[in-house]
Image (cartoon, rainbow, N blue to C red; front, side, top):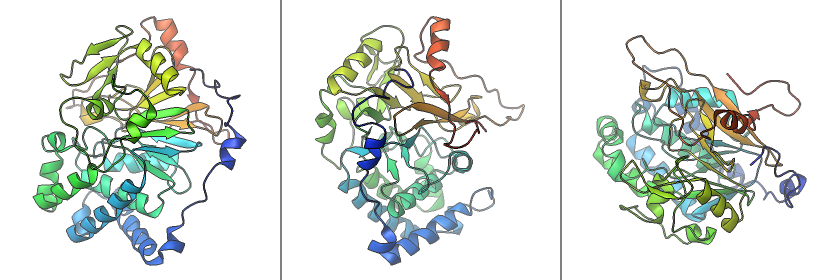
Length: 372
């Protein structure tokens, strides 16, 4: 898909803006809740650049549980395929890298000024998963129509009990809070749809994804098991090894090729798929065929890779651009390496041409580029 492929699509551009629903104003609907959320966000923002204090110093476990109960209700009011209108910025894996999340906000902007969609994997592998997820929950409560949160494979108990979040909850507040988070994660929407044309999820496609209503009709709360649509939306990966479906090297779900993506775009009546789930060196990668983008939004993943972070930006005409946060230097003791390509065209010239269809983001009326 070319960066300007949607310029003449019906319903794009100025028409999209006119379809925006009126903004939900929590300050008018519930002033006390808005004041509380503003205070929570202020306290959490105070943890940025101050690693001497963690969330335990600014928020009690009882307050976090109250936040969880509130945001659960908001998630359940949304469709399992939550819908948003462009312009919007799409953010990939965060993995408990709270300081990097805030550095990213410094680059791309914050809600409510910017509209954001997150593709999951807020917790595990990093040190501040509770900080990440509670900040995003508070922003969701305060500005529900400006931030959209999707579920990742690490927002499941079978995964986050192993990869760090369980131990983090146990250390900071006690195991009981971990169970409260699982109840909430089971209610987070599984996928997102931007301006009816761009499908977003954490993992990828599924042989069981026949129509978009297939996602809308998934009952919640739900907990993915070991196979099926829910697992595929969270776990499947694109590949450049062929056009069809393949067994995944992860041992769970599938890998899918260019032909599957093209058929899905046709049958679902969409133009583009944006997903996360895999670290890529530049923070974003265009799959062969130009119909799927992988985005990863924190740098130096697990100190094992030297990857940059990126965000995919869609303007009102659904033109694609990126903002990129380069990776800071790692200590010499880290044996980090470049992240491998995952589904680019095997022809290097074609892969380069695909990548160049995504231009650096330029804010309207500005000559600034999209890197930091």
